[in-house]
Amino acid sequence: MAKSYALPWRTRLFAQLSAPANYLPEAPAFVLKAVQKTKVHPAVGRVLFGKSEPMARVSQQTVVCDQGNVAVRCYYPKLDAELPVILFFHAGGWVIGNLETHDALCRRIAKMTNCLVIAVDYALAPWTKYPVPVQQAEAVLTWLQDQASVLHANPKKIIVMGDSAGGNLSAVMALKHRQALLAQVLIYPVLDATLTRASVTENTNAPVLSQKVMQFFVDSYARTAADIYEPDFSPLFAADLGHLPPCLIITVEFDILRDDGFAYSQKLRAAGNDVQHEHYQDIHGFISLPSICASADAALEKVAGFVRAQL
Image (cartoon, rainbow, N blue to C red):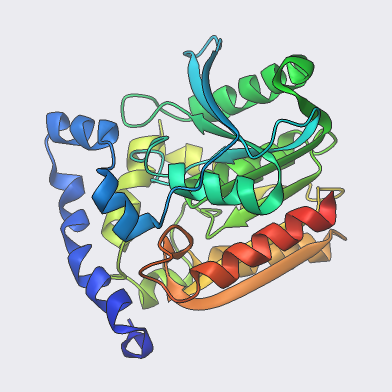
């Protein structure tokens, strides 16, 4: 991982501590299921994810979906009527991650944007395969539009946002529902599941997300080898990129997904879309780690500023 020695010591230490994640592909099923359901201990959460911002209200609901009902968590920074909405999809390679792993981040986003943040607990691979999470995401969007008045949400101001695999789902939603969405925020997103770009080779053993782990995630999510070439799996392969919602893409240097973001940014601009691309000298997952990664606060300010500009 070239030049990573320039990262702050705490980031380099965290990178070393994240090495056990490389054994996830060999984990037996019961271990993987336990990881999927893992909650974050409050003390660990404060160290890794920062303080938990108080909200005016936090509620959890269930969205009915033919492919399996979906839990969502709603973060209200204030109780005003018709709040703009951020539909948030968490990271974890479609295999791990849950509402708890991204609770602190969602709270910060809600506070900084004054938006209702709705976090989506989509079903996880390998027990649930593509395209079920996409279908569940669409069901949540329909539910949000139908229940907007009950939720005190503005159905004309919906932004999709997500990190890593959640960025993938956000990009897919923007492609499929471009007229219904105000904007999209893609944070180090998965956009080309072939994993053939130069950044994959350059950052093969990068912290948090190595090539080995990412390949495991892709293999777990896909039904067949052909799936990865579909635009609902790899948005970079979409034929029609015109008239998409304004997009903020965040990439980081020491990340196998770095070149996905650069390539998508270029293709979106070439298709005439409004694109803001921010790049940081940091590691995958950094925006959730304000106590560990020096760029996290600045990146979150960019996210909040972009969201406010769309409203």
